[in-house]
Image 1 (cartoon, one colour):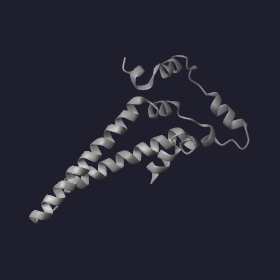
Image 2 (image 1 turned 60 degrees about the horizontal axis):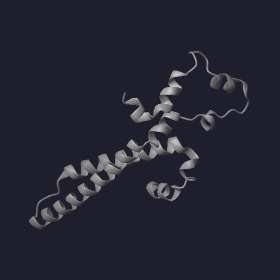
Image 3 (image 1 turned 45 degrees about the vertical axis):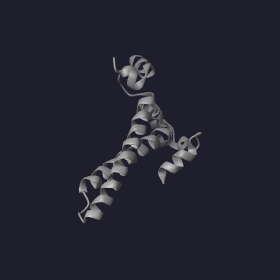
Image 4 (image 1 turned 135 degrees about the vertical axis):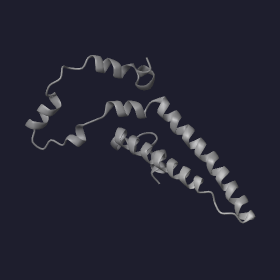
Length: 132
């Protein structure tokens, strides 16, 4: 099945051993403990698994390479069109906006998955560079 390839066998085993439906211990604890801050304790394991997968990293790497190629083609096309006195092609602007949206969403997903580890991990310098 494709699930082990996308999310790993860990997620499938966790889903198969899941407790029956009802009020989970997470919400029971939240209603009893004073000063409970769910945004600090709540984690998204499937998001973390997806963001740290090789497929997600490969997708982002391919997007970076394709963006670089398109930027080169766009720069060449703009140079040629300015020499010939033509206007710029608006398609390049649309494509560049789509890449910006993709990279922004990728950054948000990584921030949501890694939380404070985003700036504490071994890739902290690359992560800080990505935010600029």
